[in-house]
View 1 (cartoon, helix red, strand yellow):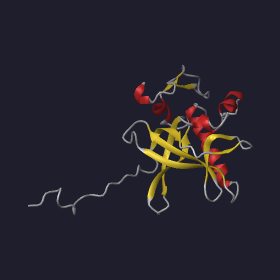
View 2 (cartoon, helix red, strand yellow):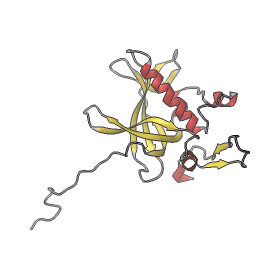
View 3 (cartoon, one colour):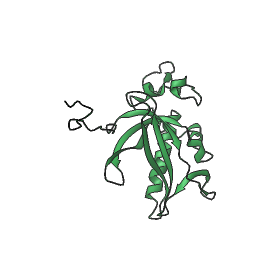
View 4 (tube, helix red, strand yellow):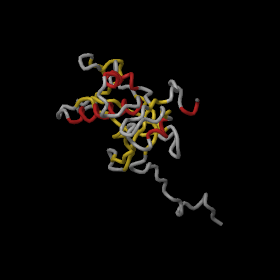
Length: 193
C-alpha cells in the first residue's frame, strides 16, 4: 500500500515566484563585494566588480510584511558597465526612486530639502533602507523566472501611505498637496516595533 510519502507522482511543483506587479515594503541588505573606487565614491567594500568589468551593488531585498513576508529577492543595481552608461544610469534611477520612497518624497519635488534627502555619503547609506517596491519577474542565468526589484513606489502611488505607515497632516485646501511624513521607526525591522 503506497501513501503520499512513497509515491511522488502527484506532488505539485512549488511556484516560488511572487506575482509580477506586486507592491510590497522591502528592506535592502547589501552583500558586500569588496570592490572600492574612491574616485567614484564607491568605498567601504559594498560594490562588486564582475568578471566582465561591470560594477554593481549586490542587493538582497527582504519583503517585510504581507503574504510574502520574509521572502528574499536578489537584484543587481548597476553602477558601471564597460559597454556604456545605460546600466549605470538605470542603477542611479533605481537608487533615486528608493530614496524618494524611503524618505517620503515625490519625484517631482525639487526643493532644497528634497535634493538634500537624495544625497548619500556612500553606498553603505543604502544598506538597511526600507521602501515600497514594485516586484517584477525576470530571467536568471539558466533562463528560469526569478523575482527582481526594478522600481520603487513613491508617495504619489495610492498604496504607498498604507505600506509605509504614513501620518497625514491636516487637510489642505483643494489644489494643494498634503504633507506626509514617514512614521519614525528607527532602524528596527517592522516586526520588532
